[in-house]
Amino acid sequence: IMKTKTILLSRLRLHFKEADIIAAILARTKVIRFKKGEVIMRQEDNCDRVGVITKGVARWYHEGGPQENSVIQFFGVGNFLTAPYCFFHGEPAYGSIQALDDLEIYFIIREDFDAIGAEYPAFLTHSYAALSKLMMQYLDEKNQLLRLSATDRYLYFQEKYPEVALRV
Image 1 (spheres, rainbow, N blue to C red):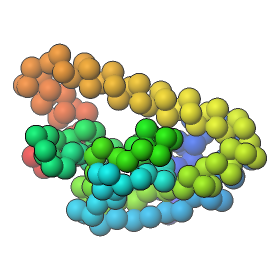
Image 2: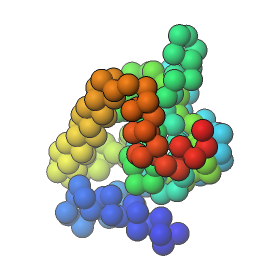
Image 3: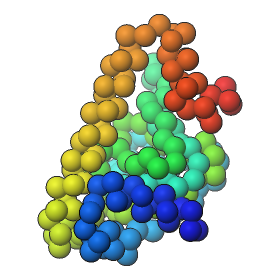
Image 4: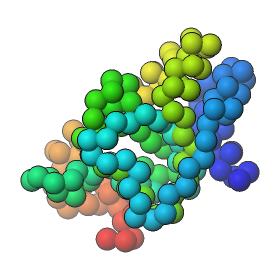
C-alpha cells in the first residue's frame, strides 16, 4: 500500500503544489483492482473517472470493424488512465481499455473531480493543463510513429513498453 500511495503522490505532486488540493484529491480517490484480462471500459461506454495506475499495465484498443483489436495506447505504472475526450465532453469512448496484468488504479469520479474544482479552481486549471499536455504527447507520438517503418515501430514499442514487448 505504501508503494502505491507513493506512486500516486509523486504523480499528484508533479501537477499540484498545494497541500490542500492534494489532500482533497486523496480524500475522494478510491482504489480499484482489476484482474488480468478484465475490461475496465468498453467501447461506447461513458467515461466518468480518471485515475493513476499504481500496479500493472493496460491497453486501450478498438473493438470491431477494420481496426479490430488494434492498440491505441498502452498505460503503465504512473500513467493517468482515462479517455480525455470522453471524460471532459461526455462522448462515448471510441475504444475499450483492458488490464494486461492484475491492475491497481486510484480513480476519482467526475462528480468528485467537479466538486474539488468548485472548491479549488486551481485544481481545474492544473488538471486541464496536465491532461491537455498528455493528449498532445499522445498525438505527437502517434504522428511520429506513422512516419516510421513497421520494423522501427516495433523497435520503439520494445524500448518504450518492455514489460508488454516480452509477451508478444
